[in-house]
Structure formats: structure tokens, C-alpha cells
Length: 243
Image 1 (spheres, rainbow, N blue to C red):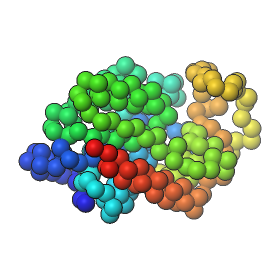
Image 2: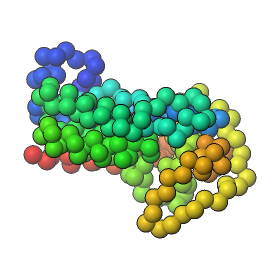
Image 3: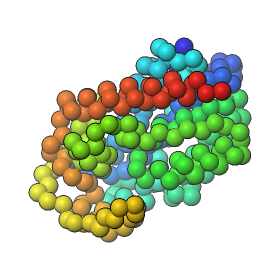
Image 4: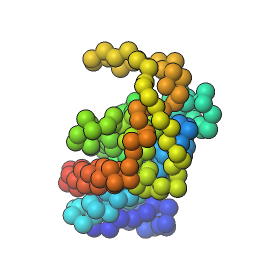
């Protein structure tokens, strides 16, 4: 099957393929990533993986795939104190994502996959997916790409601007990585099994990035990218099989 780039096609071309296609929408963020990573990291990684996985999936997919432009702004208010962040409030982010899904439906699309690249977008994705499915009859799937990494013991996954993300960016575009700062020890933060804690003060205590970015490497990043690409392509192929 074929991968269509939404922004490169005419309305007639899109209208012809959307009713039977799988629409893939990368969803990122523009926010501070410590002192060493570009603010567009989440959008970069979501876009890269969506494109790579779609191209791979097209070789075996029973449906065409339509790659929508990345939504580069997400729910990032918790990063505003550091600067360098363009954020939507959670309520607006849900509304924007739901409206994009509504637009897909109005153009004739019936299947949407959101590829999320930002931890702060998780609740947004699920709220928007549920709303869009109920209101517009869309089949909406959500993938947080880091969940496709099989082994989370090698490094904190996804972390934030830590070893994992820094390695991925080194593999995609090393020019976007400054010199990683060395962190000797992280301050202790509360952790309770089965409890998800939101505490703005934690971000300030760890200076806006997690774990050990100085341990990152392009080789490990490339291996992680390949792993996620394959797993994501498999998910897209499986979703294309659904009625």
C-alpha cells in the first residue's frame, strides 16, 4: 500500500483515500528539555517514528496510510517555569486534538492513530480519543511510543531529556544535542506503587531533566529507534486489519 503525506496532497486525492485509509497523527510538544536538548525533541521523535513506521508498515498493510502533520504543541504547563516552552493548557490541548479528529472525520476519514511523543499528553490523548470516537464515529487509537520498548531496565524510559531521549536525538540529529550535563545524584521523590503523583516542585528539584543524559549514545538511540519503529509498524498493520 501507499503512504500519503496529508500536506502534500490535494483535497481530491485525500477524499479518494481517506474513507479506507489509516490516518497517522504525530503529537508532540515544544518545551524545555534540560540545558542540552532542543525544545522540539518530542515533536521530532514522534514525527520521525510515525514516518519510519508508516513506511515500514506500508509494505504489508492492507490499507493506505495517510501521515498528518505533527501537532507540535502539547500540555506542557509544568515546564513553563524553565522558559523555552510553548504550551497549551490541558483543556485547550484536548479541544485541539478533538477538533483535529473531527476534521479527519469531516474529510471522510474513519480511522485515526495518534502517535504521542510527550508524557504530559497522555491524559489529553485518551480524553480526546474517547470524545472523538463518541461524537464523530471515528475509530481512534493512541500509542505512546516509549511503551513499545521491551526492556525498561537499561535506562529510565522515557524519562525527560535523560539517557533515553538524549540517545534518540543523537541518533536522529546529533546537531540538536548540546553537551549533556553530568548529574551525580537525583533528589529523592515520592513513589507509591499504583499511584501517579503530579508535583510541580519535583521538576524544580531536578532542574527540568531526569536521570543520566551523559550516558547517552547514538548507537543505543539507533537501536531503540529500530525497536520502536518495528513494533509501531506491527501495530499499524494490525490496526489496518480492523473493520
